[in-house]
Image (tube, rainbow, N blue to C red; front, side, top):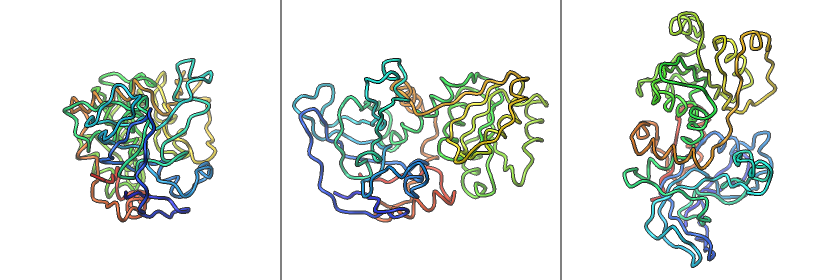
Length: 342
């Protein structure tokens, strides 16, 4: 089978690998579409904090596919079922898992990072990590269930966003775009902030989705905030930049009594003065990963057509030239590239 394999820092290639065999308690999934996200790009570069990832390995953790074979001990799935995987596998035994917080499991492992992943024609999976895809959701769209689930957790569980709220999303990467889309689906007044590097592809993509944008390098975020919020400040600010300055910008633009939700993981030490945060009683929260419920929320949003997935997906990259997708992503020339195996 074809598989996209990382062979070194900033080195990926398409190889011929053995088709996996399944155990009695596993299912074999034929991969249809697999997405590329920020963590894949960090792993591709072998950034700090990602050096533990084994090389070589088959990459990929967000995907959709169809069951083609089931083990004798498997119930609940059959050949022909369309599925997606929860790629972060929790242990089920640590304090966090028993406390209903499996997304921050002490012993988690990630498909495509701790073990071979889904940038391949086939993948073997334990059924407890699978979700059935609703009949009305195309597999192409279902491939982004995992990043949408991260957005649903951030917006629907970790934030206080309600219809009519003024919401700022910092960073128009894949998660930022999806956070904005989920908040927009609630009826919030959303604006997404980006940089010059986002002006060619990512900010125009959001404009096409009907979501307002501002380039903070060529435009004036302060003026935009004042105009949209009548000088009060944003009710909720999501920082999805992954940059150490993001939290400071969020604090500067949230209203007194508002909320900041950190979704991106800062790439360096953040220096923030919290005097105004305390005096303004600003709620600072975080959001990491997702749970079974968030995956189901994401699938329901897809089923209802609430997320303009076909506009967000970029299918122009080929399985046989994976490096082109990674380099384009890092250059902000695309937002959500996907590899199509079927």
